Image 1 (cartoon, helix red, strand yellow):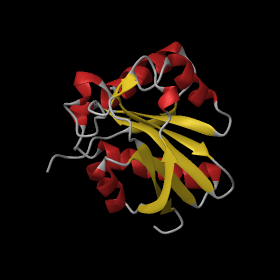
Image 2 (cartoon, rainbow, N blue to C red):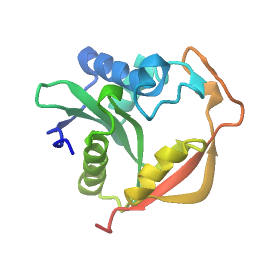
Image 3 (tube, rainbow, N blue to C red):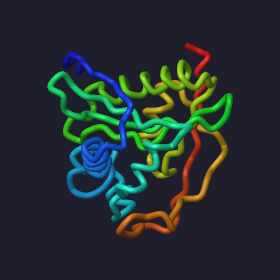
Image 4 (cartoon, one colour):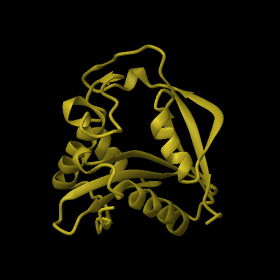
Length: 184
């Protein structure tokens, strides 16, 4: 088994450098041909850009949230995620992206653990939730192996929020997963 990549974490800033690098990473992990090299692609479900610079900058500047960046020892952006404080008890985990060429090497596990720790430490929450497109069985299983529970709750897919593209299916919705962060 390869050794785990050593990561350095920091909160993204609204600088053009952070926005552009994060935008490139998120788009490469979710959409288009590059995403197909990884196992988390949504390219068969959606043909859009996932997020635009204004949307990403809004997430970075959100007072109740952060975009967490993970850089490797060489300083390259390897992963990112959004953590949004919903209320005193609950945070939301989203926009999780790992460089598709580096997936399945332990980076995702490290970033998820750091995000959970951040939510506990900084936001003081007891639970983390996320939304995953219902067709993504392999991804849902990955989160379940990391302590998340698939709830009966679903949420509509935001077809109106697609960025420069379209959905390739009309039956998409989100399954909601939750983890109790007080259990370690």
